[in-house]
Image 1: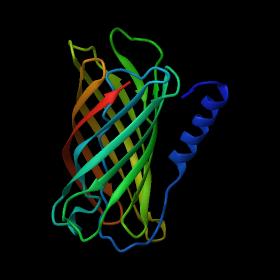
Image 2: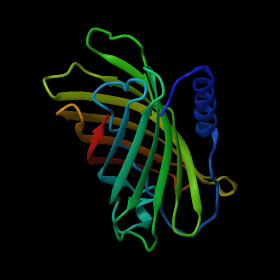
Image 3: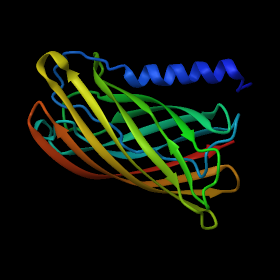
Image 4: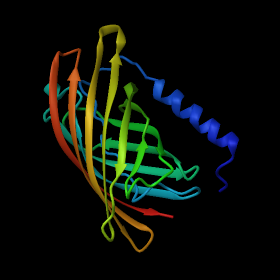
Length: 231
């Protein structure tokens, strides 16, 4: 697999900006959708041609918790990311609801880039993670939105690589009926890096969601646990 080159860099950058601006809007009858707030950063920004794949379990906030059996839903998530350059990683992520909160087979996908600062800042690394999100069920696409976390890798301790992020986002279900909202997310996680290839991510996410359609505000603290491989 050959990655890099000016054409690929510019192409990926244009795709990332485009996807961040796109929002899928549909009617649908599912009363609530779910989204995965985890970021599951690698132990350090990926090098060019590096590949990481991971999967695990995640607790996800309900977009409209008053319409579901519980305010959060247990699910599975899977992530694949590729180092396009030493400072830019492209990523795809999929999640699926495994709860019985509503009678629907709900899922979501996201496409993101991780844009890392090229220099080490006293043991810290900074990055931006623009993300486009698309949500659906077994019948149709139900909505989407975008997130923009500011990420930081903290100095590591042996195999433990702590990280954090803070960011904001928005979501739209049906703009004709003013079904939209915005949120802020804080992420606190640790990546364990074993044997040069095996990674484990444990993460907490604090979400504050503002639902403009239902005129309500909800707060969540959710978690995720993922294992994977880095090559």
